[in-house]
Length: 447
Image 1: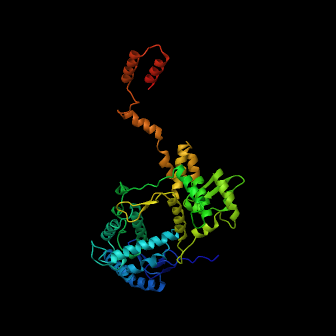
Image 2: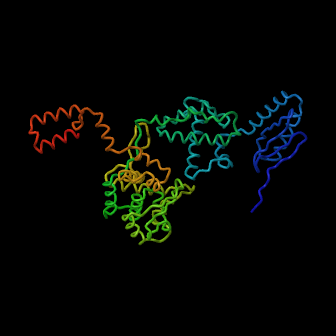
Image 3: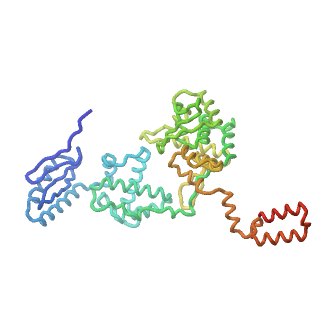
């Protein structure tokens, strides 16, 4: 293993130059009246750092603290101007910065696209209607421009969550590139973020399938007249989703090594959360997996669908997941259900029925069967928010009882005085000793 190179440090006639990390930028350190001061030299080149530091030595040797402060301030300003970074070069430097965010590859593309959207806004006065000043460098970005960009995003008909994700991405980029601008991060302002209540009345909730709809999905998948790429494998994927409640990626990329047919158990390490769950295999799923053994050729239970899901483009971005998702949505349309709906104020339609609906169905069926929430979470994963959706209420019957208790129009709900009145009317009009009268009387008083 190669030995790590040490950060460079060199003493000068007055003070020293040093790096805080190997290969990082140089700093000039000195003392005035017993206090240690440090000036960023804004370069990773040793020779350039030595030259800049040598120019500062006469200044820092001055006896007047005020003189030193004035000269240092000027020196910092000079260094800042020398390192002014054009907006067109920010992404290239950021993408190689050691403190950059390192998310999954699809999110890296999202970071770049979001920042480019900001660059287009900042450098084109037509887009930047509130501020027609065209800027060209990172140091020129102001909090006012950040607010203008936030206002611009609100006009693009995107969701609140999407808006906030874009602001957070740009905020992170500016935080990483802080050496190229002065003052606070312009995207740190709280008012740039939107609140969830802005979308009240525009929320389209993910819907769960009913049992009848799930049965219809399976029937359509068995229908020989329905054509679909890798249809037999998609049928198995649907079985896995229905009887385990797992996400699409976990179902499509399930491997045989995690399927124990002898003990009838499936082991899943969820891609999204890293949670590890063990799930009993339902009889219906067991039968589907037995059929899948016919085409067993490699590690994946559904090899062709897994290969399709894992397809990437030339840049390394996954594109196959969308292809498989379209296959899944086609099956949903077969049963007469439209997966997406239009929402006022949104450019894109919102998905209400998809493969993820099977996860909601799994939770709703468990709740209806009085399965404990802890048992459900042991299958879905302990951080699942879906469980709260179906387990925070006390049940439909209890809710109906509550509504009946406050409704004055319910015919089957009577006050004690009303029940006594009905009982007296019954006794006056019917023989008090007959069995039929006693049964009616008991029914009235019981209600």
